[in-house]
Structures are given as C-alpha cells and as structure tokens.
Length: 79
Image (cartoon, rainbow, N blue to C red):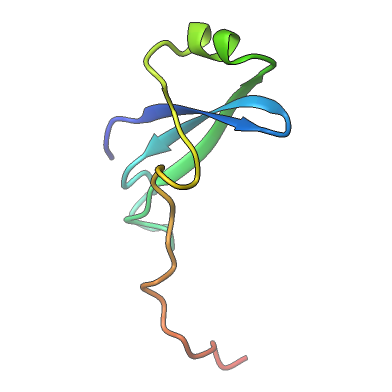
C-alpha cells in the first residue's frame, strides 16, 4: 500500500475530507490494485477543513483520481 493523501471536496454537506490510498485494498479483495477512497470528516467551512488537514489539497471529480471498472469485460456474468 502507498502512503495516503487527503483532499477537501466542496459538496452539499459542506467540505468533505477524503483519504486516497493508491493500491489500498488487500490482495484478496476484488478491488485490489485500485485506489481506496475513504470519507474522513465533514466541515462547515473550507477554513475549518484546511486547519484540521493542513496538507490536504482541494479536489474535485475532474482532477482527482477515480476508480475505474474499465478493466472488466463487457459481457455479463451469466446469471
């Protein structure tokens, strides 16, 4: 697992802090190799979030790392 990094996202709840860990899932997980994204905390203002997580960057869905399922086949499971 890699060292996690933090991002602050503006959303309908205020300012949410997320922790991103590249290759953050155990080898036995079906998500192994993907970035683990965890919700850490929510604050009313950006200043409160930045004070609590001074090393965090501001992120959004256009510039932040996102999990992808592009590696999965297009055909169904056969269920």
